[in-house]
Length: 111
Length: 114
Image 1 (cartoon, rainbow over the protein chains, first blue to last red):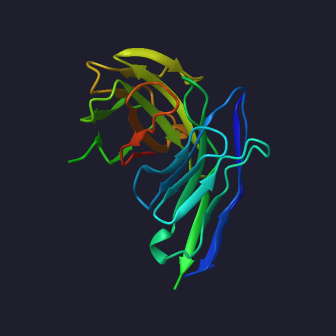
Image 2: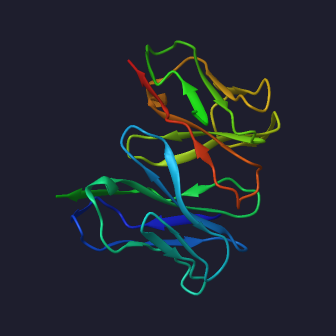
């Protein structure tokens, strides 16, 4: 079945550091790929998405590119802020199937 | 305006009790979901409804029974609660069941079984 593997955390960075959270997937067909963010005590919010190969999703300074050849969708941000501290989930969906989530990566940014 | 709202936010109860969690969305979406998030933050789909009809029912004990009185509501009733049911339960909705559509999540209900 479909699956998502993302790097295990926690990840701790200093403010203004560069962030990469790796995500790879296995899926039949051509899934849509998503990054969701969960701030403490809240539900998940869509951060960005990409629906086909070579698409780049971007939002709030975060970017991820749909790489079919490496089955990856790594999340990057050039300069993190304390307010980016949260849990980040990579997810995929194929057709009408439900979202399949990775296990989440906790990011802590310190001033 | 809260798009997906679920109540209660916290639920503390004893083993063996029956409890319900309510969810409402005001986005006009056709599809609603229930997810369970365990203590390690792992998220797993439980149910999916499209226009009040059950679409997905993962391997969830039949003590869990979703009910959708209309397409804006999807409630979750749990019978004979067990310790392992302790988790955060999230309701979500999407425009339709198409995987391209993003899902909108409620803030979660933290269920603690004593």
